Amino acid sequence: MKLNTIQDRQSGTARPRKRPAAFTALAAGLAATLLTGCQSEQLLSIGDMSSGYNKEIFWMSLWAIALSIIVFVGVSWALFYSVQKFREDRHDAPPAQFHGNNRLEVILVAVPVVIVILLSVLTVRSMARLNPVPVNAPKIDILSKQFWWNFAYPTVTSDAGGTVANGNEMVMPTGQPVVLNLTSGDVIHGFWAPNIGGQRHALPSVIRTWKVDTERPGVYQGNCSQLCGASHANMRYKVIALEPERYQAFLAAAKAYRAPTPAEGSAEARGYTLFMQGKASTGALACSACHRVQGTPAAAGAGPDLSFFGTRRTLGAGMWEGEEAEKNLVPWIANSPGMKPGALMPTYDGSEYMVNGKMQKGGVLTRAEIEDIAAYLRSLKLPEEADYWRGTPVYGARAGGTQ
Image (cartoon, rainbow, N blue to C red; front, side, top):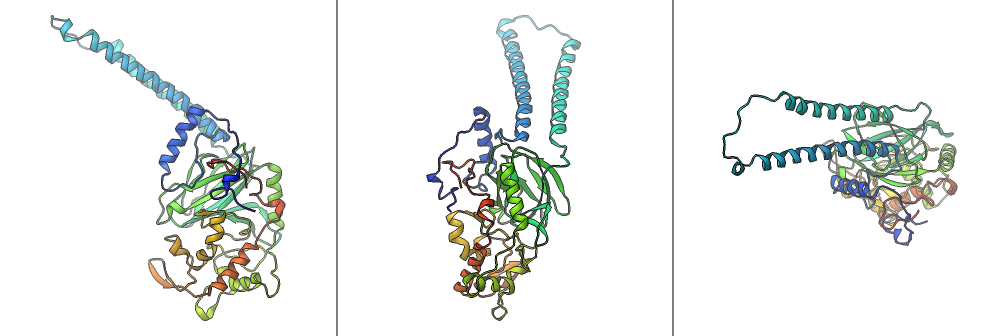
């Protein structure tokens, strides 16, 4: 199955979109300007009216824009009126001398006060609508680290043990608020998927809780919005919004999921052994020392969860998608710090890499051994009916399309 995002989406069919044209154009331009250098091929739009958050901000902004226009017109009129009426060439006599104008001073003070009070009331009203978090809403715990994301579902315990989680791809339902609990494992990051709601800073040792939502199923782009290191621009993720029925099917399949047992003697079996044990004779560290795979002894959390790696369509926290992700998997395993500056994953081609400011020598695996690990990772797939990419439209792709 091909991913129709960057390389493959030419064959897709564009989907019609209904949204306020003027506001969307302005919002899209603003988003593109703010995120220059750190966005993918998908459009990020704060004018996406499928999100309740964006709708509320849009209507509040209309009041602010209207009042700004009134102030601008009023001040401009007063300026030009005064200039024209009191031109020096129209008045030969000296101007009348007076001290103060109580009525004018009251107006000049009262009008701004009324405007500020009105905007404050509108802001508080919007905050009261957006900030409360529903008690029974679906919850997703988000961990951000240099330079990747992990999304866990705290209310869903795997039959194999542990909480269901997925790296760099967040699956959420449509048509209802979703509560996000955000934290950081190292420095300050910024979570922003503008199509589904506002952004929040991810702070070490602090949990930020808020809600997002969208009415439209689709694949949306998310980025880190806070400069966080060498690969800040490559710290991306996807949000896949599914209809409630498909979302529940995903959770059920993820709950029951156990990594498949590779056939004896297969490339997957050899890859499984290397993944779990590494290769001590060449200094190659075990992948299981940092990553979790549901239903196996690999239960570490130093790196993104790889339980459903074969279902994912992105690689390197969104650096590559579709065919590019497939093509770069083996080079990525061999030397991820060389492809993504600042990445802490050890190398397997003997290259040096930096950890905590110190250079370390990487282990060595042959290309065939790395391909075996790649084969094992590709085998980690959810059942086809729970494949959240299948048939899901990509929002903001230049030619539209579905997965």
